Length: 366
Image (cartoon, rainbow, N blue to C red):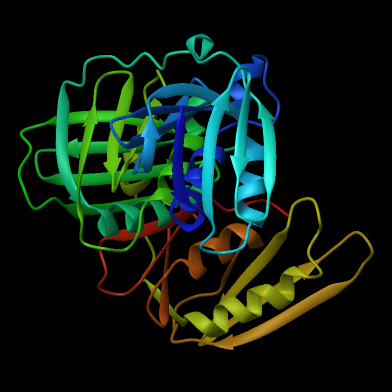
């Protein structure tokens, strides 16, 4: 294997691939990147056996071959080289030589034939969506995913396709985010799949805000998306996502509109003195007034008052401050609309007149 490539061309896809590779591996070869040269094309592959990213680049002066390189060492070398540096890479036995006009490096490599295959099932379904729309859908929902929850179906994101209707849902059991939109082309599909947490995070990094159409292919246990010159693949979570529809089947109080910047700033200040473990803050609603307060075991207290347009009876409800801040910060407009269930069992946060995405935060007892 032998080829030359510009450092600035190599670095972005290399960073994407290395982000998939876990720092601690049970198989040493999974700490490496698989590099294959065929007909002036470099194919780089990184996987943790749950997620895989494959990137293809054009190279010059290529001699066919395969090798695996230590991923993070290779990335660190390329990242620290001067911009626009031409890198010559050549395999010599069980070593790979990297050379630039001023630098020389030798990296040990493992046999490419031992690199594990990412076995994908036959992709039975597919649909098309723009890169920008998919990225927005992920960004508006992924922050609500659980992390290492025993209910493993919550450690991921629900992707629901119903003909041309797209719905993404994420929840950690205490809060929930929903994104709903329409695809430009009807799919004829009715499918619900759960993309794992790490897969969602890596896919979001790959996507940009452009209008480039992406083909999303999936089966009952795998998903694959082609993004620019990269192919993203992931195993799906083998489970059924819980029915969250019941949260809508209840009576609600009238929506309360609050200026988003004022609410976010007040929450941020009050949260400083909230209990560090539970992060609880209490909302007291009264005639045209919202008081937000918090206290902690050191008997420290904080209180903020906001003028609002609310003329009904008084009531109080408590939330995790960080959950509320995450929801409010993901709104794009200048107004946050809070719609609270009549029995104070949940709170919807969205923008007035905006139906694409909404957030739900469950209250807590203080």
